[in-house]
Length: 320
Image (spheres, rainbow, N blue to C red):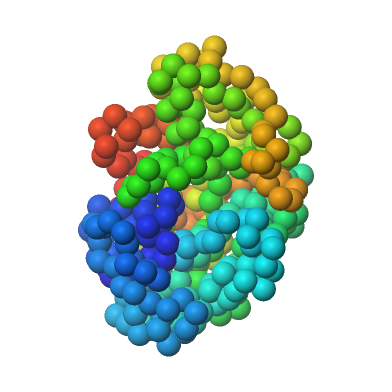
């Protein structure tokens, strides 16, 4: 199929686009400016503020995967109207473009729509965000429900492990789980200590998945024409410190280099964060016909990716 991806030059988007290409689909990245370096799929310039431009740029596509986000959170907090447009407005415009072209819209959402008081929240949980990022992503979910009630797919992700497929990782550990595993592995392989951030301003429990595996499950959503809300996460909820220890075990690293610390003040999220953002995936597995995705196996796949520079997944494409 021909599949357009927003945010294809970002962390999650580059993995989704790479896996879709690997699985034989014709991928097109929708971009607001030409990439600084060549990318291995077609890119098309569009005006994300204009529905007509988005619709014209996606004529003939079978699906649009909307991965793009604005992640300068301090800037977003300082300008709420711009933040709203960057998330909710853009999602609406992308969804309307998909509707014009009869394309399947797949919206990448987040575990941070939850308030952090539950555990392994099911797919039918509407969310109860405690910060502006989760709130904006939850509003984006509602856009999909309103504009594509029987055809849109909302795909929540959590604790994304992996590496950027087009560039060096742009940041290290944060108070979520972004780049946590990769940063830990890089530090310990270099013989450096690694501070595992703890405390009440940190996301401490989640259900990690691998960026490439998310791409494989997105491919399954598109192939099956699935609609509804899905949790594209691994099978296991785990605490931050326990994840660090498990990474050391799988990657054969020295756990003695790990330390528990509070995050630096300048690295705190400018709002509350969910303590436990774990997501259950029972309904997702049933609808998407997925097999087991244990955390330890996802870590082994990621280890192989770093050693061989070859993407790996547990979920394989469905063939006729």
